[in-house]
Image 1 (cartoon, rainbow, N blue to C red):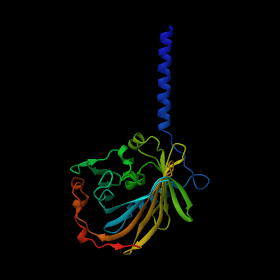
Image 2 (image 1 turned 45 degrees about the vertical axis):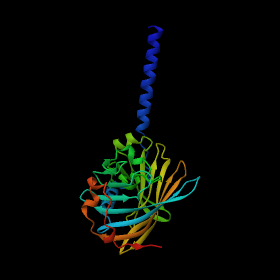
Image 3 (image 1 turned 180 degrees about the vertical axis):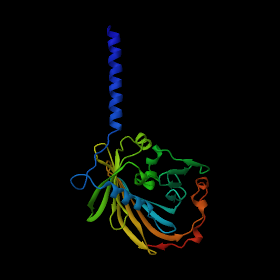
Image 4 (image 1 turned 90 degrees about the vertical axis):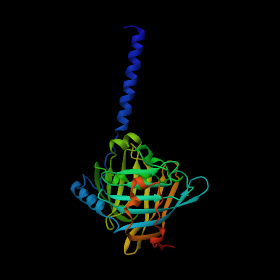
Length: 288
């Protein structure tokens, strides 16, 4: 075997080894951390998760919100918007509408559930554009908020392990570890899983952590408080923290209108370029 052939074999072997290493790295699967010795009752976990997926606010709703952008370095700023929500036969459906002149996408429509989807509008606001897996992680309106955060698809991922009951900020919570499907894993190789916590009393999301292959959190979503209004509980304040940069965005609800019956066209992807024109029919309760 001559030197040139040996060199080619060495290069090919090295390339093959690197390809295998990259593939192995992309398939890293964080081990569950059970709350107690042994494994948790997975049948009970599936029941808890199925019940949580069925829950939601009664009727349609509209929320006025403020995003407080808090970079580790630099000036803070505020971004306002309105969120419309409903539920169809697939699952929760949410439309986020930012004011004209906001950086990036003006409107984002999010379908959650087993058959999920995300849509936004084109740069000229003329057409509806389907958002691919990679674009789910693009920041919205110059904040830490992404379409992935709005959708929270991990709540419906099939590959999910129940880890038991733990304490989160002094309250008991059911803890789960969900593994991304192939489309998400390919679009975001650094995301090995999402660990999330559901309050045992309110059946509400308390916290979610996007995990790297070594289980180090990449991003943390923390529900800080709830608000009872119009005979229902809603999430009032959420923090989104980039664990690498330590930049944070705080989502806070300023006003709410619950128990609505919004026109179905508001949530139609094809209608997304047209701004919702229903302000006069909604009566908001403003919060201090």
